[in-house]
Length: 568
Ligand code: NOJ
Image (cartoon, rainbow, N blue to C red; front, top):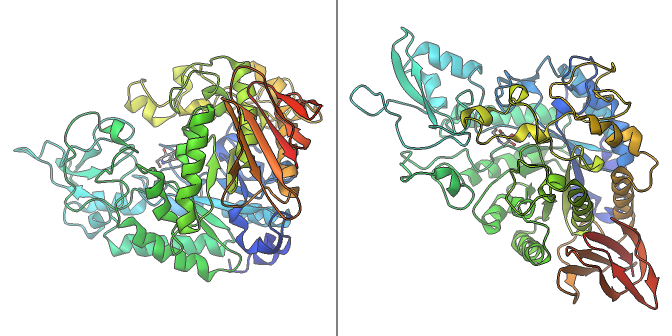
């Protein structure tokens, strides 16, 4: 493979309207669609999505109107954490296809004018990774052990873990290994499942290896990397105890000795140099859970990564006051580092927003279906609000179909490792990972090639009515709303990138803001309340998440849980 593999058809050649002269900075305004390969499209009928399946559906994504596709991991992996446990960073797992399929997918996406972002998992590998297996085989003192965190245990016989850290998936963050002769040996650190040992980023071999992996995929033609646990690689010196119980509650609220340590930024500075060596603006996107948006901004300083997920926004309920606060905070914190603000409502780790908003505020892991109609109405309104904000937006596969979370999956089909580690009290992420319905009246609804064929998680019977086929051409469908919204966003000169909004006076429960451009201005109204509200009509309606507002005598009524876009 050569560096120019896919470079000839790189989408720089076809700047989008909203990019205009600034197509150089495509990532400042891009709409990026997350594909979860296991659940997107299954080409060979084994019940598991794959890369040829994704490739065959690229025209659907082009027609939807997205600028880039982020693929969750498809690398060789025993799938202890759905591919976030990588055994070989340069190989495609046979269940997803081959490197040739990845090459074809990248080329096809570029031909269609879309970019490809792949997932990079640098905090931990799989326990089946060659380095870890050799480290186990060679025993204490092996140089390979320095690439992970192996430590002697505490207690008279080394029977206690080296410190008190807890795994994010529940239970201790340490597992005791066995010596080559079968006796109990050193412990190793895993912030996630025991099958995901953490790398030791103080080891030069680890840093070298990841620089080489970056180049491998850049040479394959990818346009960027979503960096998994981007805040996790560096641990506080000496691996100090945290103290106290319920550590998981501190996550994201406090600086932890294993998260958001200042040393991680050195890694991103070295990666940025590599990204910048390649043509076509290749980017890095941080999955960084930090205590504040200000600390998140550190990851996107000019010599580090390009974007960071805005989880504070994702965690905000459908309520005008809270939304306005988080929008201002997000824009204000990115401005000093000159990075685009990003917006996201759903991904493969959280309850889909159609279900979150169907329930009373309760965080990002919801286990009840709630009021589905209300949830969908709000989800549609929340999407139009998000797509009107300045910056780059992330969509998660299936949200364009208005899919709810599947809250009633039987325990025996679940695969989320944290469900098992937390004894069924947590780890309900399978609910947002159910395979997509594409067409037909019988499961797997076109996800696989054969009606009645398998899917790795069962789809609810109601999903026939939510399939791409059922929604296409229906002007009231969520799919057509997304298509229209992305088309308007692409065309309207005031939409897309930018760094601020002008808030307008609005009644309680309503968000109203204006965005300006030399060629025309734009107003967004979002009524998060339960009552209709009368306001001045700012111009001509472009799009609405519910019934189109009627303008009468210069005024209009905003329906509850509805967002409308206006050309001024
Ligand atoms: C974040 C990923 O999004 C999640 O799915 C995974 O379980 C953890 N990182 C560990 O890699």
